[in-house]
Image (cartoon, rainbow, N blue to C red; front, side):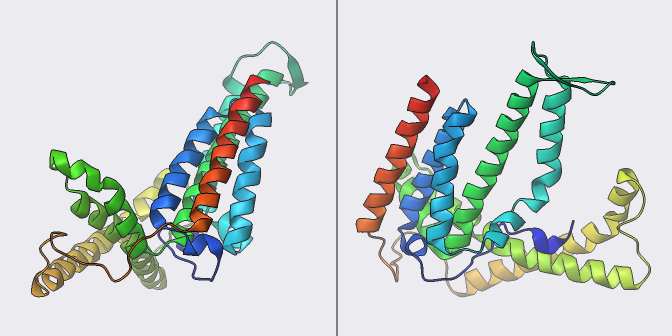
Amino acid sequence: MALSNITLGQYYPTDSAVHKMDPRVKILLLIALIVAIFLAQSLLAFLPVAAYLLLAIRLSRVPVRMMIKSLKPLRLIIILTFLLNVFFLQGETPLVDLGFAVIKKEALLTAVHYSLRLVLLVLGSSLLTLTTPPIALTDGLERLLSPLRVIRFPAHEMAMMMSIALRFIPTLLEEADKIMKAQTARGADFESGNLIARAKAMVPLLVPLFVSAFRRAGDLAMAMEARCYHGGEGRTRLRVLKCEKRDYIACAVTALLIAAVVLAGLL
């Protein structure tokens, strides 16, 4: 798997309605989308969810290739989920006799159901990170978690940690790619052999990557201390979050989505 295929934490800048939405609203809409995906118990119920996601991708102006690229790191999990459900679930209606196994209609429908659920979850999560800058995502998370401060929940610190983690994913992937190319030039082999051999070959890559990650973490901590960072208390923001008309329209459309999924489940 090429490290460049991982899009988690990457931001695709463009001038679209989805990019301009309030990050708090986008986070809540993602949660609502996840609820809708798990409420969908039939292939018919997945149709409004898929239409909702296609509309959001269209409005976001994010290239389709980038959305498909976000699925590549999980393609093995999706394929295994499909195959395990097809061949190991029991059913009553034989569909295809392969000789060594009989594929049942119920097993095939369940395999498609769970695989489609994984695909939609990944696409929805990727759309959030591709259309929301890490700083805006931090502000949105902090504002959503701020009511928990009454029970001494560290809302600002939690949001900051998640933002830093997302921010450094592309940086660490770039560092890992450089280390892999350097070791390949020195004769290291990361592609040949079985799964166990390839896992062992990754050990020389992980050690310098961890060293680099700890060094970057130390540099970041020193930089924050040098700038007198003491958490979120008393801090002001350059951009004040404010819901606009497009945010309310998106909430209304999402509410219709959940209603459509529930209605499809009753049919």
